[in-house]
Length: 282
Image (cartoon, rainbow, N blue to C red; front, top):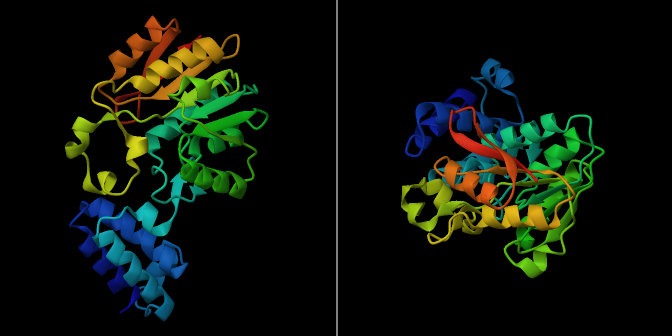
C-alpha cells in the first residue's frame, strides 16, 4: 500500500464519526505521526510504499480511531497556543475557545507580572501558555485530580515553565483557603449539567474525564459561585477573574459574579460568535 492509498483508506474509515473535512484533517495528522514526514513530502512521495513500522502504527491508530477514540488521545498530543502538549484520558482535550481566554488575559496584562491561579488546570494548558506570554508572573495551578496534575507537571517540565501545581478540591472551603492570594484568577471549570450528557458527542462522553466535564443538574453554576467567593475573600487587594462558560449560561454566571460583589462584568463572544468568556473585577 502506497502513501496516497493509506491516507485515502484512513479518511474513508473515519467518515463514520466525522465529516469529510474533519476526516481529512485527522488522516493527515495521523499520517504525519506514522511516517515522520510533513504533508508536502508525502504528497511528493505519494506513490512510495509505506515502511513496515509506519504501516503497523497506522493499523493500530486506525483501529482506535474507528472505535471512536479522539485522535488527541490516540496520538497522545494536542496543540494549544502553538504548543504541543501530552494528553490522555486523564485530562480534557484543550479547546480553541480556551486559547481565546489565554489571549484575553495576556493582552490585558501585557508588560505586567501579575500573580495567577488557574483552577481546574487539567493538562496545564492555561498556566503553561500564560507563563510563556507573561514570563515574570508567579503562576499557580490546582486540580482535584492527582492523575491530571501528573500530566500537567509533565507538560510544564517539557516546556520549561516554572509553575507550582497544587492538589486541591476547590469546592471544599477548608482546602481552598490554603491556596495563594493572586491578582488573576482563571478557570475553565466543569459546567455541563448531567442532564445534557445525551446531547453530547459520543467521542467526548465516551473518553474525556467526566469529573472535568459535568456538574450536578441541581447547581450547574457551583464553580462560578465558589470562584467569585474566593476572589472576594482570598484574592489580592484588587484583581480580575476570567472564566470560560457554557454559551447558554452567560446571564446566570454574570448575575452570580455581580451579586457576589464583583464589578465591571464583561461577557465576550468567541470566534464562533457564542457567549463563552467572562471577565470581572474585584
